[in-house]
Length: 355
Ligand code: KG4
Ligand code: ZN
Image (cartoon, rainbow, N blue to C red; front, top):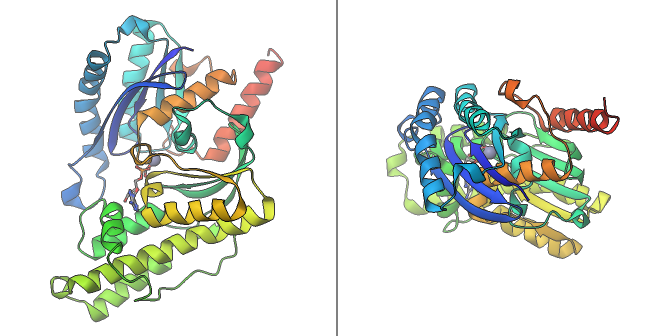
C-alpha cells in the first residue's frame, strides 16, 4: 500500500495527513480563528491563513511521525469544491511536492472525501453498498445513493442554504459566535424542542429548503426579542432546541422515505453537521429500526480534514482510476459530486479500453 500525503485547504480548515492502507500515520488540523470576528468565512483571510500554516503543519507532521520525504509515494490534495484562493494554496503546495519528489498527484473531490470519511481506518468493504448517505456541511446538503465507492446519484439536495449554513445563520441571529452549529447544538441540549413551531417546507423528497426557517427566526426575533441581551437563558435554549429539531426533522424526512422505499444495505452520515448530536442519534435510531448498518465518522473526521482526502485518494488508487495529467489540472471551486462521478466513469472506461 503506498504512503499517501494528503492536503486539505478548501475552506477555513488547514489540514495535512499521512495514510498508508487503512493506517492513519498522523494528521494535523487547524480551524482558522481569524473569521470569528466577521461572523463568517472571509475568503482572502482563509487563503492567507492556509499559506501561513500549511507548510509549518507539514513539517510538524513529518517530524512527529518520523517520516522521510522520500517515503512519500503519492500526494493527494483537495481540488474542489471550495474557495478558489484557498484551493490554490493547497494545490500549489501539492504540485510542488509531487514535482520535487517525482511521485503521482491526485486531485480529490472534497465531497467524495466527506462521503468516505468514516472509512479512513477501515478496509473498503464493498458489502456496504448500496448505501444511502447524507452529506451535511457548511456549504453542501445532499442525500446520495451510492452503488459503489465511485458511482452514485443524488436523490435530494438543497434549493437554497446548506444545513450548516442555516445553523450558523440562525446562531448568528441569536448572538452566538461563529461557527454557530456546535454552540447551538450544545445550548439545545438544555432546551425544549417543542417550545416553538417553525415552518416545515412541503417539497416532497427531492429537495431540501432552509431559507423559510431562517426568515421565520428573523421575524420572530424582531418581534419578540428585539434586544437579545434581555433574552432569558431558558428562552435562548428553547430557541436553539426548536431550531435544531426543525432542521434535523427536515433532513431526516427524505432519508426515512428513501431508506424505506429503496432498502439500502447501509446508511451514512458525513460532513461538519454530522457532528450534531440530535442528527447522529436520529440516524442511528433509523438504522436500528430498519436493521441496517449506519456509518457515521467519529467527531474528529466530521469537519474538514486531510485524512478523508487521503482515504478518497486511496480508494481511487485501489480502483485503478488515476488521472495522469494531474499536474496540469486547475482547482475547481464548483465541482458537483455528480460531475465527478461522471468524469471518473469516462476516465475508467478510457483506461480500460487502453485509449
Ligand atoms: O464540513 P465542514 O467542516 O465544512 C464545510 O465543508 O462546509 O462543516 C462546517 C459546518 C459549519 O456550518 C458548522 O456550524 C457545522 O458544520 N457544524 C455543526 C456542528 N458541528 C459543526 N452543525 C450542527 N451541530 C454541530 N454539532
Ligand atoms: Zn467539508
